[in-house]
Image (tube, rainbow over all chains, first blue to last red; front, side, top):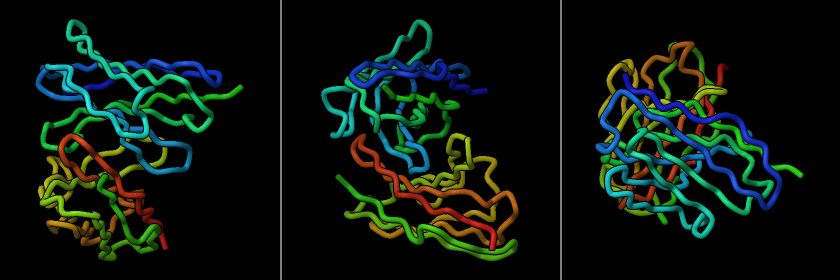
Length: 118
Length: 107
């Protein structure tokens, strides 16, 4: 069965960086892309970006351009999301999700809570 | 960027009711639309993709329709497990947008 398992809770100070991992299993990693979606407390879902796990081509939402980097490690079937210059409004649950390559997300990680606080 | 507008934001209904949630796109997205269900503290779950295709394992009381700019999610007979928040999501050239969500509450 398909599983996406994310790294644990993070607490960061404003201005710092965070790197969240998403370890996948149960399918051929390079066949599907990975999206990252976040959800601030009590708010809706916000798409952050996508990475092609085979080519490593990326597409980021405009609001994150310049401080977001998505990468993959095919040897461990793991995707990574790094967000820099953290602000308090980056406090959110961050999810990775498998992209079917048809535009919808069929398997999701359990989420990683990132808290940004001084 | 394509904007997605869901309505209503909150919906109160009873078990066995038929409910419909609407999602409108700011420009045509053909049928590149998905619906997700999210329960508190959990990751979203895919319900419907390509506007009307039911994901495997999702009960048949869920259905989706629409194309272009207007889409609907219908639950034909609400069950207790269906009270949750629902999101639509569009896909266009590897750029995605979610609607703001519809919270389905017990009346």
